[in-house]
Image (cartoon, rainbow over all chains, first blue to last red):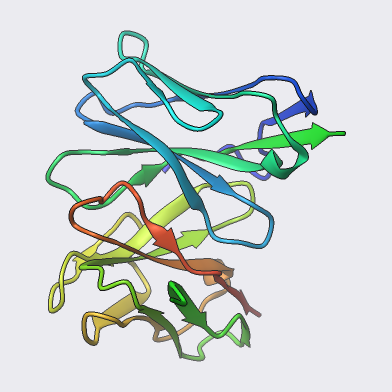
Length: 112
Length: 113
């Protein structure tokens, strides 16, 4: 798998700002793209997913955008809160397979 | 519901020792997974089990074995631990109807000296 070494990309925002976390994926055959959140010392937690035939999906305070032309996925968090501070991972899955392939993650730091 | 539980939470091994990491889920999920997470990296799939009685290799299976004991339990065994296996290990489970949403345990932090 790919590696960015020991240092995760970090996004620092102020409380109340909107955050945008980006992810580049490599497999054009993936049918689903998923975002997970991992708080310090815990296992990852599912946030939202999007199927490859969609370009936008909204959840509670989150929006995922998919651009298949440039193989790019983003997670937008509205009105970011200190509790949103975590590492965010994108993942992809092929239809017919149960397994996910995870990206390397982005750390989001929210200051009050 | 406890969700996904893992034991132990922490473990230190010497090179060459063996151990089994235990995982159990109480959500009646068909699929279970073992991942490792190294500093600054994402999760890499070691093995998974799509249903009771079946197991398949993931991205990094070398040095590990698994057993799907029943629908609830999925164990990961290190037969001869190596320092390269120092990592945090996560177990997860998912339902076939919603495979994108995996439920993760709290992790086991393993150090091999």
